[in-house]
Image (cartoon, rainbow, N blue to C red; front, side):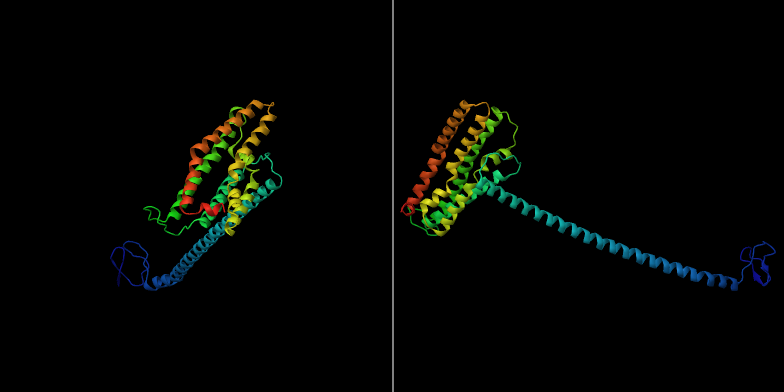
Length: 302
């Protein structure tokens, strides 16, 4: 006898259905057979799920590695592109200088920054040329006993000299450039960009870079201080003439406006006079005084 698992009534062992509740009875052998049949399926499902999880992990790792390689490749490509662009810009700039040195012309229509770059390179070459001249003329690293001075007079003079030189040079060039901008906007009524205008004015001054480079080489060699100084500061004389030449060329093309040429010439001379009187004269006097205190002026004019 056994108990029905559904109604708990006593039934025979071989009974397949309960006579009281009618539920089908399952013996242990059938249960074992069902479990033995389902067990491989369950194990197969477990193995399949594990393999699927492993394949998903492998795909994730592969995609992560592929994305890293892609990012590194893109980054390296961007670096190569930037490097190539810098090389192209440098090559184009040197071609611009070469073209303007061989055949100077105000007819420059591109929107590049080469004209402004000419001014910066011009000032840099003048800076280093003057630095080498002054270091050759005065004892920069000595401590001369001048009055109550205890600092390094040479280095102090260099720092003071070049700060004022950069300021006065920038004011000098900017004032002449603003004259051209004012004439272009007020009288010629041309909507021209600053970059194109700088290319037109300072592009033909590329030969000044050659003069200043020659002055820097002479300064490094320590020969002919007067010639080196003249070559280094040549841009201070050539820039006003370049501005006047540009304005005269374009004003004569615009209905022969000779009165404007006279007006611009007078305005340029007045600005130059004011700059020389207010800034450059004081700067030159400071230069002469400091150089004479450190016995550099005699060597300059020997």
